[in-house]
Length: 366
Image (cartoon, rainbow, N blue to C red; front, side, top):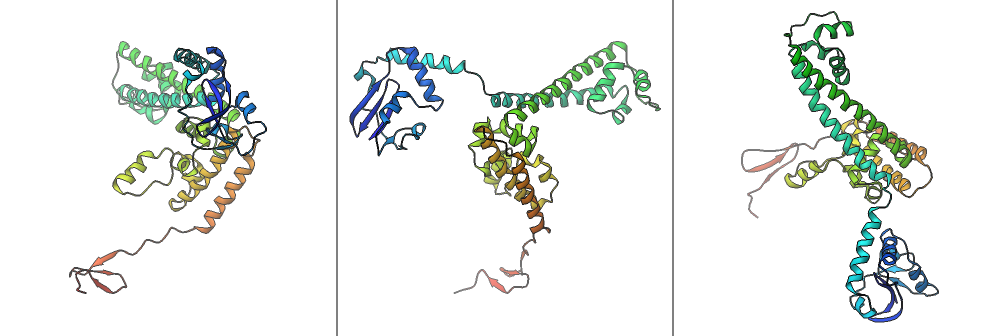
């Protein structure tokens, strides 16, 4: 026997024979609510009722695996028209389902994905505007770039404007070789600097917002990877649930897709890590240890993602200690870089001769 659920009812079948059934109410709103439960991965009361007290049971959907073993089953012989459900009712129920699902509360990890992408846009915008500001104001005061960086550079120009005021405010003892600027030109440069300062402030607020979400929604990942890297992984995966379903090898290479495709296309060396390179344990390690460290870190990060996605208890301290133990083992077992294989050379007679080996003629006769 197999349990089959359609939009218009739940059926218990034996081959092409229907043994029992529970039909949906002929009301579009009620059908929409039941379909929404199904899409969230829940079980309907009608499904539990038909499954109650039965053994050797199979189901047609993985969602119903709590009731029996999921198997493939062709249920095309069960038609809505045979039970008095017109196609117009299905259309109305599907429209109601769309309205129900779109009005549901948005998970915080979905907000996190948008926030990290917004942060990327702010970083790119800030870099472009900073480059333009340096080129523009550099004609007036080129030496300022040696004494102020990033936001401090833009803030000094926005607050003080001309070269003399900036030198006095920063208490510098230098003589500039820059040219003078007309007041109208200087005002335009200060407007650009003010806009850049606003972008830096928005970037800082977004970073704080991301850290707050990660610390609450993903405490285990945050303990292992830190807030920014955890958010980056969730963003690349498209959500915490999606990240928890991936294999650890995918997590290890996440963010290195271009290098992986280059390897598949041209045969170059495959990447050993993606955004996990940002973790201090990876980017501070010798190059021959990074792949092993990234592999271990990806495995622990995946465990942390699964715990956070299922709402499990906090195990961040244990995951960190296990990773540190594995990190120490890698450094102990691989203290030196691997030895390169000795290259082969040709002796000029169409034969290949390895260093220290004997001559093998490629054109020798059998």
